[in-house]
Image (cartoon, rainbow over all chains, first blue to last red; front, side, top):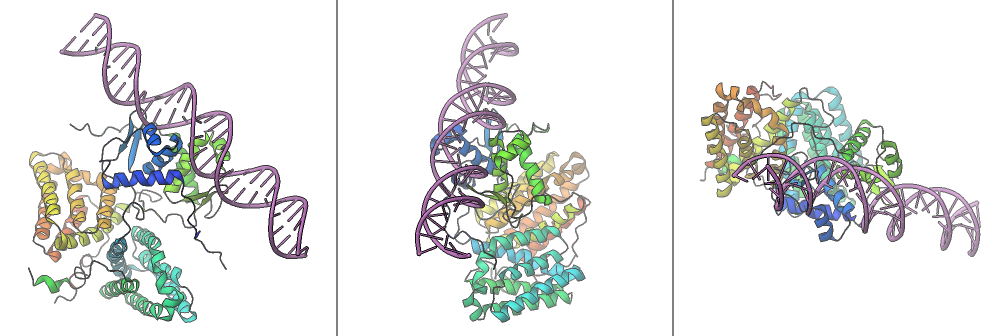
Length: 252
Length: 252
DNA sequence: ATTTGTCTACTTGTCAGACAAGTTTCTCCG
DNA sequence: CGGAGAAACTTGTCTGACAAGTAGACAAAT
């Protein structure tokens, strides 16, 4: 077998990572306002009781993230509009409730991707989707873990949207999210038929795309993601807004 | 007041940035294969003729990008799936044709944001949108550059979507894109009425959001982005029907 | 022969101190 | 009052050192 990943025991976090996380949080929370100057490296190394090298590495990370800019002789400054330059998810945003928000973003982008894939897919891309689908089918039949094929399927759809940015973005979000996909494909999940249900939805999406019906593809993708959220026990803060919003137009 | 930008002169690149760029390119190009171990810091500092501290900062940047992982005592390794962990745009994508793809992504996400903002906006967020709108109005009247208020307006809408991820993503894409927004707000653009037209569209989006009409907000945002692309001479590869169709399905 | 324990060389993480280069601030002279 | 220049900071880079952790070899035990 592939000796799988995940150092189950959390290795002692590097000092520079801790310092970087604290500083990043202060910036995101607004404790360091945009445009403001950070304390000097000497000051920070004193505050955190670490060497200046550690502080410098932490700041290097923030610079790589596009959160701060430093000018020799002047200091390090919080960038005017933090968050531009790079988009990441995991860090510095309270963990609670985030999953639902990630799902909402997936819903938006993957539905759009499915619609476009229905209209633009090439034979090669369709074959890639079919291959991922077949592998998942096999996994369901054998009771194995098909999570990575699940990833592949979603990414193949995004690739077929014809817009590489959409493909990369879905790949990115999928990765960020793959840990939470486990319950569906765990032994227990397969036993309870979750994998089977997901697979049926996958096929519906695939057939809609293959037949070139954009609207059906979008609806199938939408339904799949809503159901997937339900299988994970995640509340997606969207349903009233997206699918059926014409219903509550009456009020107000 | 705020002495704004002046880094038009390419400031002397930091050594660590140069080294980091070279290493990053080697990884992206595959010269360092996924899973492979990087040369040791000592070896790299020798190769680049810089101190180990510089190499360490360069590697810190790569770690922040999620390209490499280092284990004390073992070495630094190229991550198995480079590119996961962060989402950037500038890298590894030639400039041609990309603008249209960015626009398509904006179209997808900002239309969805406008729909949600119509349903979820708070009074404070509405006020932020109104403020940005007013400043743009002023800029149009005075013939000044309102590009940054344009940014603010779009970001305020995304913020009001109630999903911070959407807000950050729009901020991210906006930034990546702000350079291309210049033509609308340049002296020539203002003269030719481009800014005026954009402003009318902005107001339409705002009013739809303020009135809580998600469908109208989505359509207005869709129209605005299509027109904005037209003003820039960019072709958005989106069939006219697609952008909003998942909203009004079921409507007769 | 296989397993186990130990040892050693190597690599990254952290520290301390130093100097160079650039910026800001204040002083002092005109 | 204004400007030149010195002084104080601050970041960028270098050097050397030690601690912590890893990997491979080697020896001992079963």
